[in-house]
Image (cartoon, rainbow, N blue to C red; front, side, top):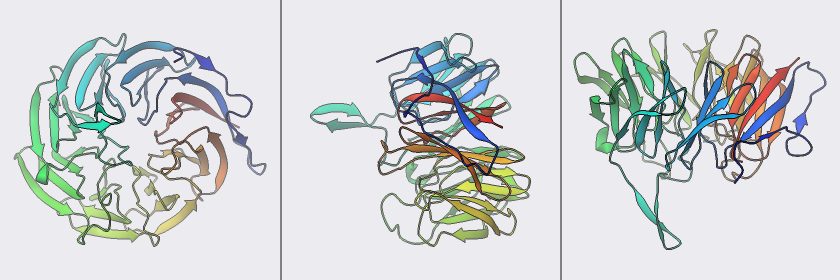
Length: 385
């Protein structure tokens, strides 16, 4: 396996598709070979990009050159975006949480949930962290007043002291259903969802649930249906999130009652991470291959852009653009794509093909876009006028 190598993107490895009617193109600057599939979104601070792969390697990479600064091998599965905590970085690997020094990767503390799952594959005993083949998302942590809030596969939402790693809060989902969603804290209330499609509102001051809401009322049409697996955002008294559900349900923050619902006629999950920008809700869907723009209060669909790849990820928004990644969830070795859309109209400005599927959400730092790919690389792409 190659390590600490930089490759220019040339030849037929990545195809740059230019649409002549628009000025912007996507120029590949570098790729860093991590060695295994990258599902986690990268995070950047002070010129360093942090990201992990599914075999447990966590990297600090120079954002300008693409060269490795340091690496830590946890020997577990990393799928969630890391969290910057001051001059440290926090992430989860195989149900164990780590806090490292950003400068050198030295461990500050780790917290083991004690959850282990095993399976036999070809006669070998192996750790098994996936609930099903499309269990590609993990809880991304949030930091509030010195406490790191994060969900786990054992159905517990933890509040970990950022300095010591000690548990300051632990609350359980119903039936200990795994928590793949990324929690939100708003006005001393904690919001999260579980694998069974239940959304929770927990009052941190009163140490009790305010409400719980099942996001669907019918029997599961199939086993993989229903899980709430996205980030949560709040806007004008409403709660927004994505789920393995063909209905996008927007809930009242105070009561949990549905404010409005959008139903995908084809039954595709609206499972991406939502973004609120300029009073517009943006979110991606899976089997419908669509990126949506909605009025966040009344649910009017402003536009819908449909391409040919599943969207699990979180889009990046600017005044003019919407940028997102996508892949074929049924053939992960099929090509992935990076799309550049007109934010106001949803029209495709340009796209870039990657060797394999892309289920790592992009981040935009200046003019550079960073994201991981199923081919085992971290990419840096520039939007060029």
